[in-house]
Length: 465
Image 1 (cartoon, rainbow, N blue to C red):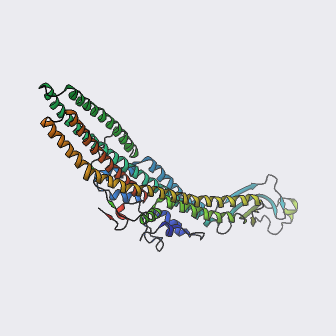
Image 2 (image 1 turned 30 degrees about the vertical axis):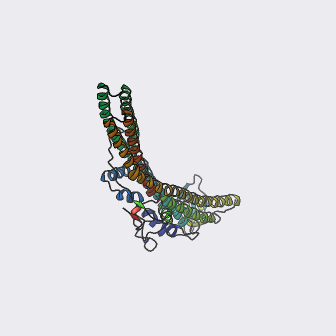
Image 3 (image 1 turned 90 degrees about the vertical axis):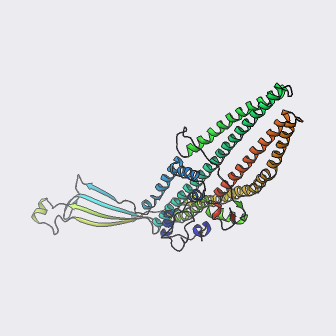
């Protein structure tokens, strides 16, 4: 059973052990770690983006998405920032560096056993009990949030690359359809020209068909321009030169969505890295509030003092040397800081309380955004599915039949070339619209997998291929 964000991270106001925090950071933070609650020392790091890439059927697209995850500059930067955040906890859990000082007396003070020439002091500041542990927990929770933010960026980049790949696939299909349309129009132009030459047809039909052929050229130029833009975005995502060519083949069919909306929502709220990040921020802010309370306690300063004393060289000391003549001095010192300025401490405590409230509201904001994205997709997917079925099962069949009738009538001489041209144009428009609807459905499914942070096939047995 996957460990949900609520069960795995939401600890309320209860203090977490350092072991828990380390397990979350080393485990990649995401709630795919299985029995982390029972075995926090053995986390298993799994990534939503990697799961989605692994579930992609097309090997070329899978290779492209893997390259995006590996080479994307933004992800590389965020990975370095995440690793840097993990190095914060070893720094804050250690005691402050001790301070050593040396005093050399130009005018040595005289003591009973001789003049004191120098003094050496070693001081160590010790925060109040439990302060260092709390600071370490804050650093670990922030590192966990940084890791979750990285995973959210990886998921976003993979989703963007999938959407661009789907758009590129559509543009290739549209270009193919336009090419087929051009071939058909050229055939019609030859027929119309032959009829006109025989005195049966009209020159208007020839001119109209030639204009349509020119229009296909213009459309192909527009497709090439849009395709170049999509390829540029994909090359930027994978940090490749903009001149790198890219071909995306037909991406195949899409799953049938029969998973209950409540199950998808639960999955999204449990597995989205943004939710993990906000919960980690809440836990860090909660510990930070406790840390602010520690500021009301004093800090302890311990010191070791050593004084170098030379033997007495005055006349009385030489004539009657005292016992322990020239004996050095060794002493211990201790002190505490005084938390005197209460207004400053109160302001610091209130600041941390408000930061915790802000983190809690941020979690609510992210949950609302996920609900909105999920609601939009669950509304559009059934409509797009019906639209694709309408095109495939009804409209394309009807317009093909209409075109065949127009071709038969044209061959019999009962209709003109313009009627034939209109029937062909309708078929072309319906075929392009069908591919557009199919691509939009694929984009919606890719977006849905991005919202639930995983492939649909992983959501129980509710998805049928």
